[in-house]
Length: 260
Ligand code: URA
Image (cartoon, rainbow, N blue to C red; front, side, top):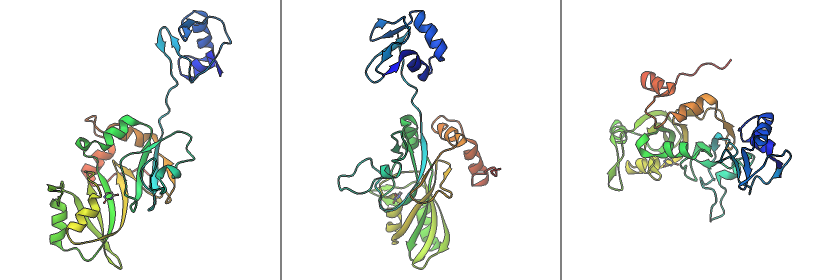
């Protein structure tokens, strides 16, 4: 239970004093009954509060989190096999947030989580071509011919994957380390692309998505996105380019200002 004027202020309708004025003016109703005296208590979960006939609701606080997902967690809210889920890793956040897209159980790295359903829809919608970059450690050596095959597209389920950016970035004990950037989200796409050219992915880590960079967030930990990052994401699907996107197109990478 909460006092009516406090609830109105909490919902951003007016200041407490302003809310008292609205009540005195007979503009506020609770469950259809106009309230004009002060101090009425309401049940915010069940009562219907209106000002000038318009429903008043608490502003929903949007939360945007970048999680460094470890291997061994499923990217779902619950798991019928009883495995750990990414929800366990954000249990300390008081607001319920959800994963944006998927990472396999055996993939680690950048996973965006939010309660902003509209943004989730725009990031995951194929028409918006949101780029995702992975570091992949694969078995064997990669010839120039294989690299070109991966870049040009691989047939998966009878459909060719879109052109990808693929670079060799090192050698490992078992084979080769590559960076691959795709903008589709077919099931286990990166693993299956490498399988199709005869390599097995031994380790897969997402390092970038939609202009966000994993950076130094420890494995299993999360950080809130900055305001600039949220604003950048909100441009997706609007036809406007974010400065990070302009920078990527111009320089091939995102230019960041040094933190002071
Ligand atoms: N591609 C994969 O194969 N696995 C992932 O988790 C993401 C992309």
